[in-house]
Amino acid sequence: MALLEEGFRYLSSLADPRVQGWPMVDSPVTVVSIVVVYVSFVTTVGPHWMRDRKPYSLKPLIMAYNLANVLASAYFAVQFFRHTYLGGGYSWACQPVDYSDNPNAVALTNLVWWYMMLKIADLLDTVFFVLTKKQSHVTVLHVAHHAMVVCTVWLVLKYACGGNNMMTAAVNSCVHVVMYGYYFLSLLGPSVQKYLWWKRYITQIQLIQFVGLVAHAIMPLFVRCGFPVFFSWLCISECVFFFLMFFRFYRNSYKKLVKDC
Image 1 (cartoon, rainbow, N blue to C red):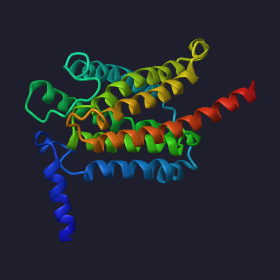
Image 2: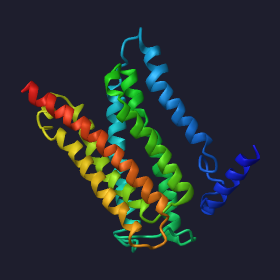
Image 3: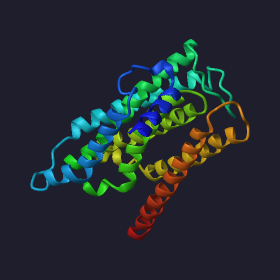
């Protein structure tokens, strides 16, 4: 017990003092609890509860959710780039974390907290699949991606809110504009769906995203600027994992598409 307390104190000493006392940031308990409840519901509790029920008709709600996500992601993409690489004086190669009370750094920290709220809201993607009885969509890739993103954003906010970490948030927000835009348009009916031939390219964009983020995350390992290399390795490992998972999904989906043709 003493060892655990010592470890907790050590980790607390590494935390960004600017986020001390912030809701859902001080302790990992809240975020971890949300992720555990999410995984339990979408993999076990939800499917069992829906087993003898008809799927819920949630189309208007899901359309509103997708449109809101497009708008929110567009906002975050603009704001992240404005405060970093396209207005914040960030280096494209290696940028250290600014832990000061500089207005730009503080604004970025607040932005990341709201970004974490959006990532938590993104968990509804899977909840909607369960409630509409589309359990085949609840894959290991889908659940792992959502759960890991929430935990990673919390880690960034707690310990290294800024620097090279912001590239991931900025690029991912851009990708989500396209992705949720497609989801929204696909629900508008056959008259619009016939123009959505570019669905497969969404996964290609995601794969390119992971390659680009790995290339960017590698830079601090060679161009030392004070950015914590732990977060470089975290980004690299997660991007490689997701690249392999998404590539497998893309390859299997494309093979099925060719076979159907």
